[in-house]
Length: 108
Image (cartoon, rainbow, N blue to C red):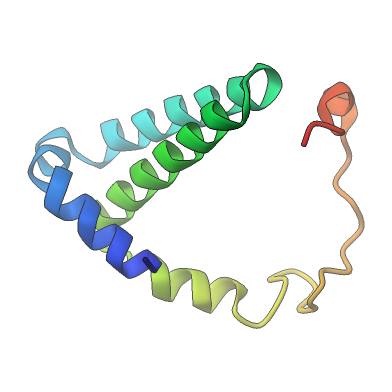
């Protein structure tokens, strides 16, 4: 399944409810799911991480649909030619600072 098919699936399953809820509250649910993903990465097993990743994608696709963004095209436009900052593949940008999150940088 590609992103367009997944976005269409989310529209079929949740489109009416998403429109009733609106973009702002849908975005809030997305943020909540990202928090659950973070918790699963820190403490969960592979199944929990997989489920939370799927939930984040589902809410992202629902929000994208509400905003009229075709994620397949948006992703290709943004990343299809490599890193959007340095333009290379693989990315040649300097690493992001870890700061206070360094205890979790080795989580895989």
